[in-house]
Structure formats: structure tokens, C-alpha cells
Image (tube, rainbow, N blue to C red; front, side):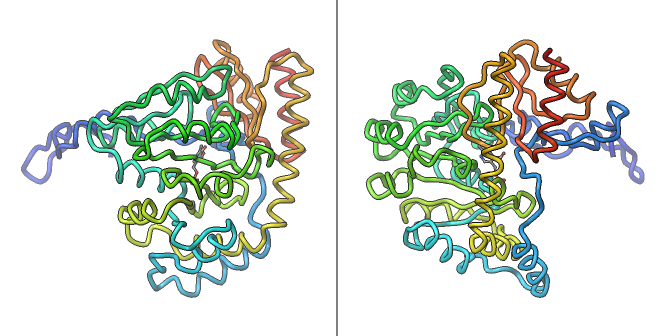
Amino acid sequence: MNVESYDFPSRRYDLSVIGRPRPAVDALPSYRPGKDAAQAEEEHGIDDAIKLASNETPWGPVPSVAGALAGAIEGINRYADHRATELRERLAEWVGVEVDQVTVGCGSVGILQQLFLTYVDPGDEVIYPWRSFEVYPVFAKLVDGVSVTPPLVDNGFDLDAVVRAVTDRTKLIVLANPNNPTGTAFSTADLRQLLNSVPDDVIVVLDEAYREFMDPALGNPVTDLLPQFPNLLVTRTFSKAQGLAALRVGYAVGDPSVIESIDKTLFPFAVNAMAQAGAIASIEAHDEVMERVEQIKSERARVVSALREAGQSIPDQQANFVYLPLGESTMDVCTKLERLGLVTRPFAGEGLRITISSPEENDRLLAGLAEVLG
Ligand SMILES: Cc1ncc(COP(=O)(O)O)c(C=O)c1O
């Protein structure tokens, strides 16, 4: 219903004053997911659009995961295991930690929200370099936290500036690695320096949603850093490399005390039975999943080198997307690509983020970019 007032039955309701949302919520923008292909088709009167806007994988689940999902339907009349015991055990074994060092959430976004709820009181500070993943400012506002946002340098993070921004009100530092949308990444050696320089009571969240697409030479924070730094929490997801975005399952690895605290804010049965079954099957299908990841990485290399040869300046890319820092022409290029059926994710005045897809879709993208950028 989209009206400003209505009569029911003998009383007139003024919808502008129904309920009293907290000012922090009232001021929030509504979440706008990436545009999908059907929306673009309708908007531009075209019929073969492809969505390269949300960093999804182009393929459906591997066969064993599809089988596990079908099997999970059997038990759908019962609530799932709130603690996701089997999934946590498998995750702990998979990443090489104790089971009390792992938890799961409704996507890694769910875990991020839990972190803000757990650690940030009104007026507390949260540091995250900007531009980065768009939920960080939203979650900070939701809890009346104060965002402190050191600017990117050459599309990457200035970790020294992050350290300098720490005050005695700082509760969280959130670092997306690789960064969304710029695709740049730093190493565990760089992160070690930061961890050595921040107080123990500041939680450093490393958001590794795109970890599988990174160069392994950048290190593994779970083995390289966690044993030494209990204030580090690593979040990961089954949405990207594993291709299970719609199931909504993410996980976090950290110190048992941090895990115990954030678990208290997990709403009941947030990770549903299908999500748990799909994630377990996906761990078992790791080799098959990683073959797909390798395909995406080699396609990324192909797309990046084609664009660089065409004169585009592209930062080092470590995720399953490519970032074109187009500045003021971003929106124009985005609209022209959309008219060609290529739906990308623009950041007005900054750049365009484009998901790496199948070889055929990437060919279409390169042809479209050649036409639009000349
Ligand atoms: C940096 C970053 N973190 C987390 C997520 C969210 O992933 P999930 O589907 O696990 O909530 C995304 C998704 O786009 C992302 O870009």
C-alpha cells in the first residue's frame, strides 16, 4: 500500500505518524540490492540482459550440494539445530581450529551485524577505510555508533591511517580484504603490523568474503595471526566462491570469548536447515568448488589484461570482480552498458564494479566496454 492516509472504518489514520521508529532507524536509507537483469530489461526495453552487479558466481550448485539440499527438505517441519553443531565441527576441522573458535550466521552480513550489536554502544567509534562495503555505515548508524573512515589511497587501504585513527572510544576496526568495490588486498604481514599497534580491547574484523579468489601468497590470517591475536575475528561466507548466496550462510573464526559473545546475538535458528546441509556438502565438494574458483581467476586475469591493453587503469584485482575507477564518467558508462544488456554496479563519481562471470558473458562484457569506452 502506498498511500499517505486511509480511513478505517470510522477513523482516519495519518500514516506519517504511525509508530515511532528510533531516530537512527528513521534516518537510514532502505537497502537497495544490485539491479537484476529483469529490471534492466524493463527499464531499457531490451530482452537479453545479464547481471554482473552482485559478485555472484554464474553457476548453480555443484551436483552433490544440490543433492544435499534436496535431502534436507525431508526435515523441514522441524526447527534446525540453532547451534549448527555439525556444521561448526566440519568448519573447525576444515579451517584448522578448535570448534569453540568458529560460529555461523545468516550470511557473513548477519555476523557483521551481530558484531556491531555486540560491541558498539551509542557514541562508540568504528573505523573502516572508505570506500568499502556498504553495510558498515548502515550497521554503525543502526547502533548509534560513530563511523571513522580514513580515505583509500590508490584504491587500497592506508593501514597506518587506520592505526592513527584509533582513540579510546574505538571498539571495532572493520577491514574488507579484498576490498569491495575496489578489489585490492593487503597481506597478513601488513595486518600483523596493524594488530601490533592497536590496543587489545579493539576488535579487528577481517571481512574475507572473497578470500578464495585471492593470491594465496598474501597469507592466511587464521593460521598466521589468530594464535597470537585474540582480538582478531575473521568472517567468511558460502555466498561467493561456493556459489550459495541465496542460502545465507556465513561463518566467523576467532577467539572463543569473542565467539561466545557474538553468539548471544544470533537470532534463533538464523542459519536454516537447508543452509546448514548445503554448507556441509560444499565443504565436502571443496576441490570441485576450487576448480570453479580457478576458472574465475583466470577469466579475471583475461578481462583485466584486455582492459589494461585498452588503456584502462585497473588496480591489482583480488576478488571475483573488476573495478574500473572511471570517476565522473561512471554513471554514463554504466547506463550505456545497461542499454547493451550489461548490468553492473556503479559508485557515482568513483567507479564501476563488474562481476567476473562465465567466458561467454565476459566476452560480451569486453565487447560492450570496447563499444562504450572506445
Ligand atoms: C565485503 C563483503 N562482505 C560480506 C558480503 C556479504 O556476504 P554474505 O552473502 O555472506 O552476507 C559481501 C557481499 O557482497 C561483501 O562484498
